Amino acid sequence: MDFQSFNFHPSIASGVKAAGYTTPTPIQEQAIPSVMAGCDVMGLAQTGTGKTAAFVLPILQRLMKGERGCVRALIVAPTRELAEQIHESICELGRQTRLRSATIYGGVSVNVQIEKLKRGVEIVVACPGRLLDHIGQGTVNLSRLEVLVLDEADQMFDMGFLPDIRRILKQLPAVRQTLLFSATMPDDIRRLASEILDHPVTVQAGSTTPPVTVTHAIYPVAQHLKTALLLELLHHTDTESVLIFTRTKHRAKRLGEQLEKAGYKAASLQGNLSQNRRQAALDGFRDGSFQILVATDIAARGIDVSQISHVVNYDITDTAEAYIHRIGRTGRAARTGDAFTLVTSEDAVMVRTIEKKLNYQLERRTVEGFDYSVPAPQKDSEFARPPRQPQVRKPAAKKGIQKTAGQGAGRPSDASRPASARPAPSGKPHSHGVKPVHPGDAPTARHPQRAPRAR
Ligand code: AMP
Image (cartoon, rainbow, N blue to C red; front, side):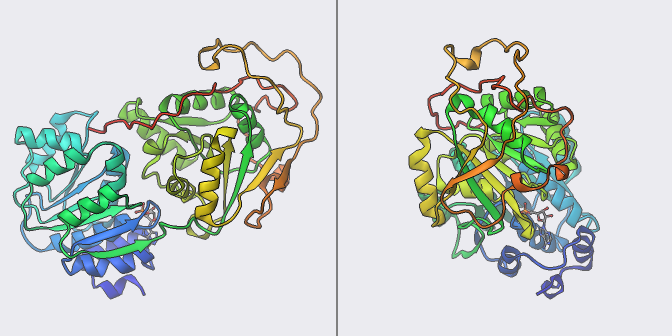
């Protein structure tokens, strides 16, 4: 199948061509005809499957005919980053169409948004909180809406946006086309879908299994040695672009700083950053000026960087689905990728749950020469003063990464690749033969992650 079979308007077809798409992805193949036919659609798909174009292209097609200058399509997304990414896709694919799109989210000037809305747009991409502000102030008119898209609905639910979504729904024309995309289908989302979708067509892509091109491995380690082990791993691994997940914003920020101190070009992405700094971190990761991005699940939602070679779970996920979702960031488009997960003894149950879901045992690895016996610091290291310069430099011992149990996906570990193939970070980490300088985060209670509200 190719894009010609959809018979898109020539302006849209030229956008598809300019974007370099030749073959529709499975979700596009399934969803585009149904959306173009005007059906409600429930899409089970995560970032990386091409889901954005799966709804953007048919929406552009629909909007080519009919009135201009009024909001006819609304796309609601959980995070500012995702809203921006969708807006960029609209601009790229619709560059010849003269259709206009505006983003609406918190953390930036409301007046600029009002100005854009006043000038007239056909598509609005919004985060729920700020959209409700505009609705409340009468600065957005949704009375002519024809299509509503709820993107990453499960994430919006996790972030506590469901009441906002329901409030928004009350403001929209009852007769409309509704599309709901979600990476997972928890009961609340299923319920919402059954309430708001009318005889939906269900399409699904890549939501249940991670790419086969990903090699998974877990590294058992004490909580306080996680950072030191991570530095060892990075030092011994041939990486291009590494996405590291932490459980909390605080841990993301702190780990980003530790990696920077260790000489890596690293940035962290978490909700406390200003929009400009978030965008700079994302752009830097995309263009390669940051080799490592440390992020929470929420902040990393929607990040699309095709060349991610490694995903590292500094903290394991809370669900098997979330693990698969994170891992889906690497091994994209038939590239190979590695997924490393640092696990403590507390994570045993979650490891078993993930293995059950994947239907195979994850390979356990240890890093040879790494001192796993360093005791935990007395004080809570989260608040300890920065350590002094390392005092002892042992002669560099030859180290490697050892398999200890389980079966891998068959690809040799990165550590076995020649060292010459590794891009050297700007400045070496102090890991080689030295006791951990930064003892890592002290064990913390497991809080369900509360998301930043992208108002
Ligand atoms: P998404 O899942 O929407 O975040 O898309 C993931 C990436 O795939 C984006 O960089 C898109 O530009 C790209 N993409 C979407 N559709 C296609 C396609 N048919 N061919 C090649 N790349 C695509």
